Length: 387
Image (cartoon, rainbow, N blue to C red; front, side, top):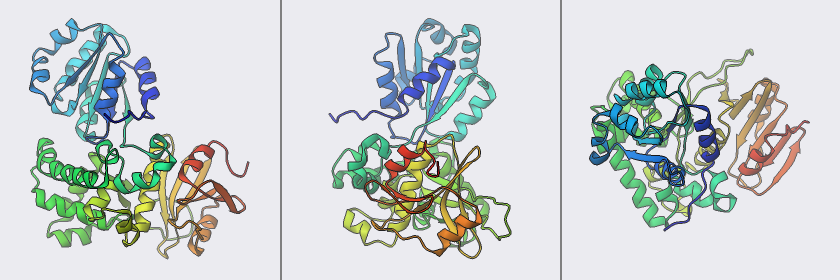
């Protein structure tokens, strides 16, 4: 058995269960939601876990009202809740009758079905949390290269390279052949696979639906539908552009990233560190890895990218209240930002900027501009560099 890795969401889930009758934990399949839920429930004498993909557990809910009443003193975890969305009506009536917090923990692998159903029937009664595959703050800085190459899905990260690559290829095939149809989408697996691979080749670039639709031989509308499915199942990130009130013509198309670097590498047939170092995607892969780790660690911030029609850009702009931070991602161990970085800093009147690179520690290169490792940036986020 592998050693259990503590998940950063653990305390937040427990806190939300004290505050809300129901908590929804959303994230991609196989990211560790079930493992974490079982670990939270096991010490509780009044906890009950049901996997709605198992017919034996689903049969227990033939009469949901009776089952919930019989187990009125338990925290009930319902895994893969999108498989039985009709349960939300019964969750609401049970919550309203009992009037206590910490009643239900629901897990889901698809945001659209879960959020739509629960927003209709559990408004004001449910709190939402998003869980990702392992991030760097959970596995530690020494594991950075392995996490970047193999991605954060536990069964991919916690094994050797050969087994990791095989698992990711199986994950891709299962998602295309089983998960998409189960979500109710009649999409040919080959078409979705081609789109997914095109997204991998466009990783870190602006979304160009015209180019993709031309390559797939389908409409813009269909391409956008496929893109949205990948986003709603937590496999693709759509990063919006920063809208600044400046006299510049800005790029308005969003950027796309495959959220897990391991899946990105599997789709591009990158199996080893040497493969990655010699691949044209290297810089974009590092950028996506950094962006995903930082966004996952800062859910209370707003995140954008900035780019003008002349190519002046910033990989990530973060805003929270009156504070604004610019980030540039460089895969070099001795990064040197180009003219576009400094122009973007001037355009947006940035007073706090960071260059995130695969280094150890942090050091300044200009006033209010630092080069830093991912973990050091996150540690120092609470203290503005110009303070």
